Image (cartoon, rainbow, N blue to C red; front, side, top):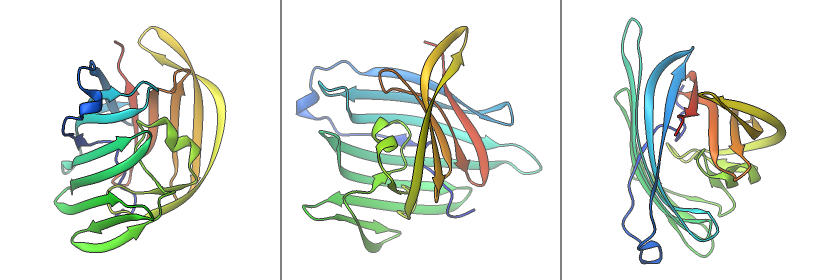
Length: 211
């Protein structure tokens, strides 16, 4: 289970950026499902640059798997992006009592990172497992933002339709195989609509709520 924790359910906060001052944030909500039961909610607040790229993101989420024992997964993550390039990342994850703490800083040649206070480096061509960014679909080397494990993937795409409430949305579905298995759906504006991936050994579905 330990290697399949992905940054889809998270709490992310960002310091103000002067380049984005005065821009209006967009608020979105998504529901998290496990075997057709709603088990969590995500609140996204994003600020974008003139190209529509996410440069600041705040996501507040909680998830609980109910059964013989309640299983909780919570994450607090911070990201900072400039012109589509990750600059800094830090965060803490509580996977039902197991702690994961990370930090990352971009340099000219690599990412300098720490995981639970141990130093490591990551290549600049690796992209975080963050489903909110369309650019994840253009990268075949990812890194897990819970523990910085590098993940090699293959990606295929196909047209699909996602129904949100009473609205059918034309999308492109991206299937990730290899060391990260997931499906992500983005609309014609390259905005996240739906995702399916593993969280703590369980396959969950995250769907954008109707506006």
